[in-house]
Length: 318
Image (cartoon, rainbow, N blue to C red; front, side, top):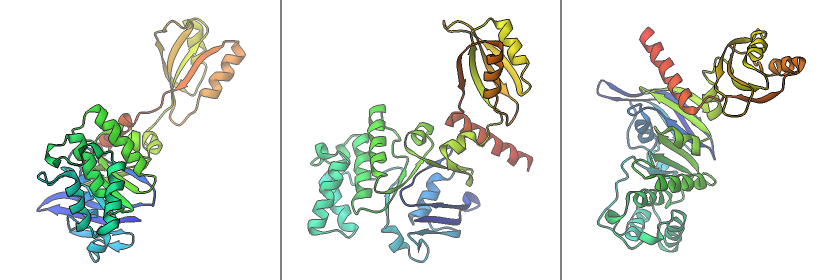
């Protein structure tokens, strides 16, 4: 459905993005993640034809954005970062105008306006000037505009930027509902946004694509060892004795108990080792009950910071 091949964009001597390649299939909801200025918006604008690449190409439903830009754009609904609206038009007038620009007319246009008004929950402001609407409603109007001609692909650039928590929640729920019938590309630098909505991540830093995979793959990409949180029903001395006898453990630290009794530890395995089974059998032999044993999962934030820092270190070495 979408294929980017070695996309490169320069702003004079400054690199926007360089040699970006990826494929996105029908029905995926993909997050473009990266720090501010990483190249997310540039990539979005290249895909939508708002910018022309210095090198490379992208195909939207097999249509080149260079050779067939008008055809390629018909398959895309785009919410830009700043979401410019005609502020002197009423919401219904604006959607009518945008629908006509995109080739709709008559009954088809009326039906599509009715659909996007209900889908994006903007009935309450349909007769208001777009310029008088709140930031949350303006974002919904922008998404309604992107949906008006029923494109199979939605590209949303920072759709919750500047919204309050309630508006963010409603916008996220809207985007998730849209992914049932549309392929969605979501550009953001907000980690919670990706975790709440996306199933796949493209991570961009300094104009380069440095990661492409699922959320779980991203979380585990730089996971060197297993980290466990465990509580034994015994005193601290016995707990330390049990852990010291397991060779696959790199180190462990005593934790403060939270009223549950026993002795609690955080345990770090040697690289690549799974130590849960060995802990279980050792406690079974010693007749020591395990009150709790949890594997501490790497958060998306930890993975993001780790990947970014590792990439920066490699650049410094080079």
